[in-house]
Each structure stands twice: as structure tokens, then as C-alpha cells.
Amino acid sequence: ASMLDLLLAREYSGADVVGTPAEFVFLEDLDRTVRRHGTPRDASERFASIVAGGTITNCTIHNNTGPTPTTFFNGYGGGVYMTGGLLVKSSVISNEFFTNTRGMGIYASGSGVVISHCNISYNKDTRDANAAGVCLEGGAKLRNSLVRGNTLSCVSGAEQGGGVYMTGAGTLVESCTIIENTMANGSGGGIYMAGGAVSNSIVYFNNASPGANHVAGGNG
Image 1 (cartoon, rainbow, N blue to C red):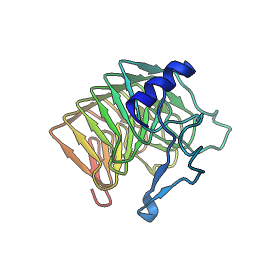
Image 2 (image 1 turned 180 degrees about the vertical axis):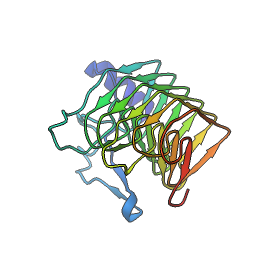
Image 3 (image 1 turned 135 degrees about the vertical axis):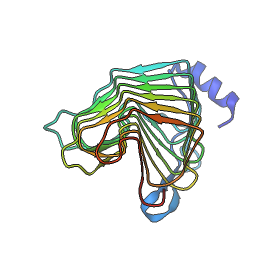
Image 4 (image 1 turned 90 degrees about the vertical axis):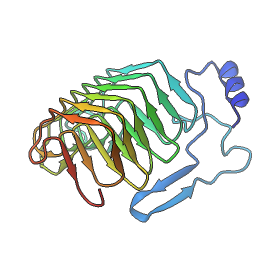
């Protein structure tokens, strides 16, 4: 969709956020990108609960919650779920999941995803999970942002990344400050790096055992 299409769609619908559905999905385990099928008429121009593309800027996304501890659920993105588009100059704070998930603050996947100049703080999970702050996969990029005070209260000890969990070729953390994130039982209190690169960033005063600040696993 062009920018004009998105502006007209927002004016017509009155929606808070407009974009396009997630037509392309990267399957990390298979190293393949697939396209969701639909007829040419309805493939992109229809209502969807998730959009891919567009920009969210100058917003505060906070106090969202996931399932209760008695519910078995694998969920992605307690505050924000992104498969495309930009998140700029926004705060994602105090979102909470109670069970297995990735990215209590933000789940971001895809080479077109950019998170920039954001505050991602005080998100938490009370059960097995990866990334209390930000989960980056498939080439997603985090730039010039603060990731602070996010908490994983782990059960199994297999959890990874109190502040940031990152994997996939092209995934990048650049010019970020990642501090005071905590894992009760797991690896990489600041960053768990299974792939991608970290550049010009401060990773300090995070808590976990093993790997208080930075753990590079897999291809990291």
C-alpha cells in the first residue's frame, strides 16, 4: 500500500493504526520466507487485527497483560508485535506476561522492522520466556534506544535474554543502552545473542547466572 492509501484508510476507518497484513513471514527454523495466500482482491485491503508496515511514533504502550499462570499459552509481544514497519520515539513500559512467550515489551521479526529512539523498560514475565525487553529475529533492528529494568522470573533455567534476545542474519543492536535488566535463572541478563551483531552499545549492570551482561550463543 502507498502512503496515500494508508492515509485515506485511516481517515475513512477512524482506526488508531493502519498498515497492511503480514503477507510475508520468515520461518527461522526452515530459513525460508513464505507468502500468505489470498485472492488479489482481499490479500491486503481488508481488516486485520495485526498490521505489518506503517509507523508508530510518539506513543506510550503500557500496562498490557497476557494469560494467567494457569493458562498454557505461547505468545509473542506483550506490548508490541511487529513484522514490518517502524516504531519511533515511543515508550513500551510495564507490560506483563504470565507464561511462555518471546518479547514481553516488543517482539520484532523481519528485515524491514526498525525500532529507534525508544524507551523499553520495566516489562516482565513470571514464567519461562525469552527477552523481557525486546526479542529481535530475522533481521530486525534496534537503534538508539534504552532497554532498562526488564525482568524474567524464570522456572526452568533455559530462558535467555533479560533485556534483549536476538537471532537471525542481519539482526542488529546499535547505539543502545541496556542496563539493570534481571533474570532469576537463565543466560544473558543484558543480551543473549544467538545471531546478528551488536555495535556501539552500553551493556552494563544487568543480572543473570550465567552471563550477567552478554552471552553469545549459537552463531552469535
